[in-house]
Length: 214
Figure 1 (cartoon, rainbow, N blue to C red):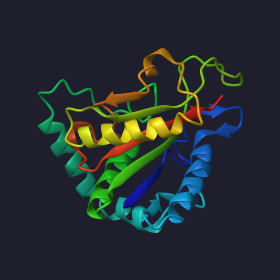
Figure 2: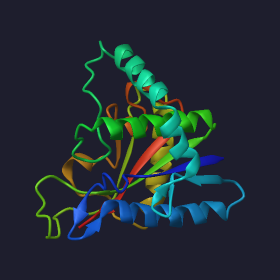
Figure 3: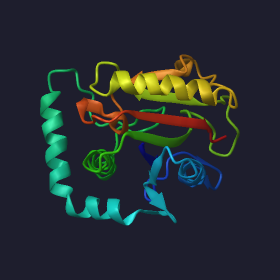
């Protein structure tokens, strides 16, 4: 099974932050650990989107040479979903913030590249945060959450089934998020680009908020 381990964020947009610790640093550490774990199992063929603090050459080249194709696909998906109460491009975190054009291109581009390379699964690695937490103080929430595409999306049903299995496995070692809106454990979303918003992804995808950054 070809698994793409997608490191959340990068050095330009690093995600959550606690003191001097940036989320992307934790995402890379956990992603590398997961990559090594899967690579040791002959059942899996893992690829990780970032190594050594940079996008892997194949993906970086795709972003650079396929910008027009990515923009055209975004527009096509936007038009196709225009009558479905579309909320716009959404980021990969609990706050669901609108993203910049550059970030949207990276997210859509990653999905497009993954489909062209015939991956069987996209697994997004993130650490969580919540609005209003003091930047230098530990927060009041903890635990992990599993985000999957809404069942109305074309990759929804397969992603939900996979997300439930992963949630059950991770729950043996890690407490579930105690944030109220994440109480379901496996949370369906139709808005996250990473998971195939606007029916932009055929491949099953799961986004793991592994823990709160503080």
